[in-house]
Each structure stands twice: as C-alpha cells, then as structure tokens.
Length: 267
Image (cartoon, rainbow, N blue to C red; front, side, top):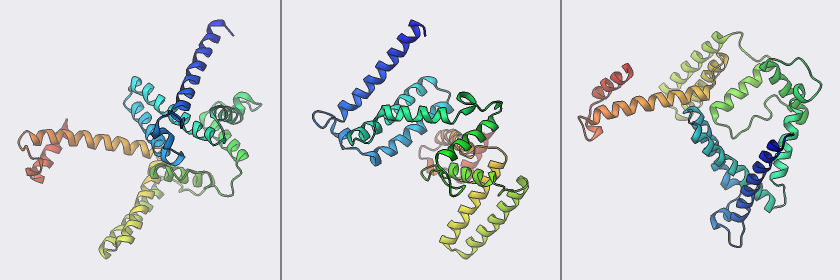
C-alpha cells in the first residue's frame, strides 16, 4: 500500500470519527441537543426513509452536488441509529460496518470465494439469493420481503418471489387477461356502491397491473415516479397558461383547463 493511499484512508477515517463524535455530543444528555436526546428508533425511522427517497430524487435529477449532500444526510441517519444503539449497549457503528462487510464477502463467493464463472448479472442474483437463504432459512418464499417497503415495490418483490418457483403466467398476455378480469370485478363493485368491496377490488386491479409491468421488466416504482413527474410538469404548464387569463385558477372552466392541458402535451 502506497503512503499516499494510506494517508487518504487515514483522512477518511478521521472524518468518520469526527461524525461519530458529533452524534455522540448531540445525544449527550448533559449539554447535548434536547431534540436529538429525545429521539428513539421509531421516531427517527421516518426520517431515514425520507432521506433515502431524497437520495433517489437527486439521482433521478442527475444532480451530483445534491446527491453528495443527500448521501451525507442518509449516512447521518445510520450514525444516529448506531449511537442510539450504543447508548443502550446493543451495538455501535463499528459493529454495523463490520457486519455488512462480512455479509458482502459471504454473498459474493464468486469474487471472494471458490465459485467461478459467474459473469452474468442474472447468475449473480442467483448466487446472492442462495447465500441469503443460507443466512436466514425460509419457511416460505414470501419470507424476508420487508413490510415497510412502498406498496408498489413490495408487490413487485412478492410477485418475483412467486415467479421464481413457477407460480407465473406463461407470458404477459395471461397477466393482461387477469387485469381485465379484475377491472370487470371492480366495475361490478362500483355498480353495487359497496365501498369496502370497491377498495378490495381496486387493490386487486393495482396488483395485477404491477404484475404486467414486472413481466415486461419495468421497475413499477420508477415508472410511476416518471408518470408523477410528467403529470406535475404538464399541470404546472397548464396552470401557468390559465393564470395568464384567470388570476383565480378556479374561475376557468374544465374545457379551458383541458384545452390548456392538450396544448401543454403538444410541447
């Protein structure tokens, strides 16, 4: 190892140590920040999820300066949880880093072990899943799909698990036919004006639609984010055009809004 590389590692270690000491000071009941001291795992969890989404947002916008900032915020969440665990003598940041390092080595036997000729990404996934199963044996293929995941993402993961053991349509046309069947059942529930039944059938429609996306190799979460962004952009453009004539947006008719929307689509 070169001296230059060693000095770089030392500098990185110092910065991490500084961050750990910062969080320790914030969590200190004697002179620390009252808000930080008052937090626990449950109260911080929502911020951890929020920061992960902000990382994804920076990536989607290809804003590398913002990504650096958001990754720092996400790292702070890890440090926060680790300090709370250390306060309770459960584990600390070093334990977290050591555990994930050991896990990554174990899950990459094709890199660090004796498994050879794994050159395709699909094969890597098979090796990864096999190692995960060794670590935590499953009683069901549904085991280990995190409940806290966004619903679209979790549905796609559940469907992938089912597909791995053959519970799958022969092709996407089977999934499309199932979607049509669920739509018919939803429309029937609407005619009955049964709110509970409608909500159940609506969920089935969404689940089958996600299945179509999965079979077409779409990331349904990403596709929905793109649809959200497209809708927001068009709405803002339509809104700007309408407000040029109506200071009070609601004074415009639906036909005028639709005309402005179509004009925005043509752009």
